[in-house]
Length: 162
Image (tube, rainbow, N blue to C red; front, side, top):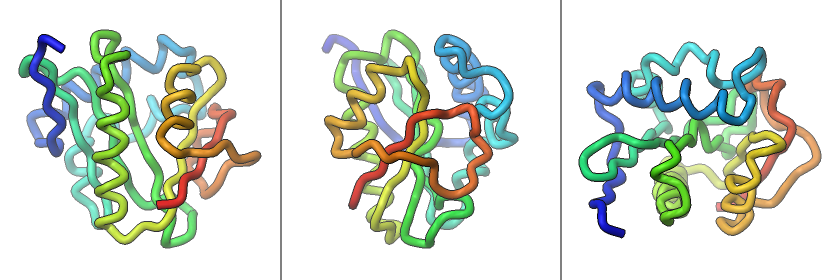
């Protein structure tokens, strides 16, 4: 890869860039209606949202420009040992270069450090490359949603032991 790749913890200065990425990527996959994360109040304040206990969010930089991010946090309405892989979105230039795998590894390391034993995620039909990445990263499909994320637009759920 010719560009320098860096995965680092989110900083307050990253909020606008991450919000713009989420609002760009989600509609690309038809995930902009009710019941999708694009409407979560945390989108405009990701740094503060993930400064909470047992939460971490990371940004991906290519050549010094933020082009993606992902985080982990306790699963809303879930068991205390379950976290959720959340808000993992990459702009097209960050896809297919191994950054997703590296980001998941960074997030799962953080989840383990926060004391979680399982990691859950939600996605939707049509995000085929993401789902393939999740399976390659040790996530297994499950039949129904867990917790109470409010993301009723999602129709694919995965879980992984940590």
